[in-house]
Image (cartoon, rainbow, N blue to C red; front, side, top):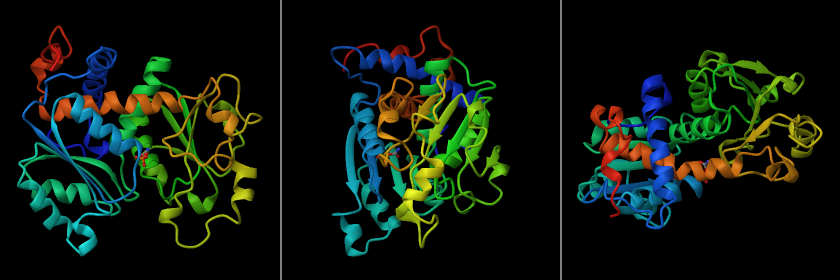
Length: 315
Ligand code: CP
């Protein structure tokens, strides 16, 4: 695998290969010296045209923990402000000879386009409303760590599905791993034909008692033109996950950032059934595994007696 652009490009075996590596990087993350030499001598560029806290920081730290040299560029404050195009910016950064470019961009398809321009591995860190594959992989890893297998698991994805790249990636990834996915929200926030991604649709939370996992999405106001709900208060009345709606055996997930008191009640964010902090922690190890898979990879490592035999020594 050279690039990570979309979950739809991956087979279940390829997802499993990344997940198998994750435990090795959990072990590295628990060491006193949390750094290994796997990417020593390689350069990773992170290029973010949209705001990010979790994805940008975890990709940067993952690359550093693997001993890569990291160049982090945010569009705001860079030559992009002066009108430089994506292609020209990438050509400039390519002068450093990156092994990988991590791109977040507001346009769907930007990462795929970039992969046609450069020899480096391209990792899609979110392209418009299209895909956020590393989020989906870390969510699968988080859930597997808690419940063992996603086979037959009932997962409800609730909220602004229309504007959500996380929803699109996760419907595909959860489905690939055997889960039964339902999306729920007001009709204005559910895309037409979303069932084609492999999910069922509900326009209310009636029936959500069946869910093993409730995965919440925030309102993506930055992608909205006009009003999609009468008011946030009305939306919260009908769709907020609060203590009354949360069943005793249900797990709660959210990709972040959360809007407390809108899609999720503050008490639910921090309750014992919440995996939200686990998702953030998983972001680091899963992104280390993604770098390893793309930049080192290879079947001999994947199938050997030790999952990642070359990362054992401290850097
Ligand atoms: N989940 C996610 O993509 O968060 P950031 O926007 O903070 O990266």
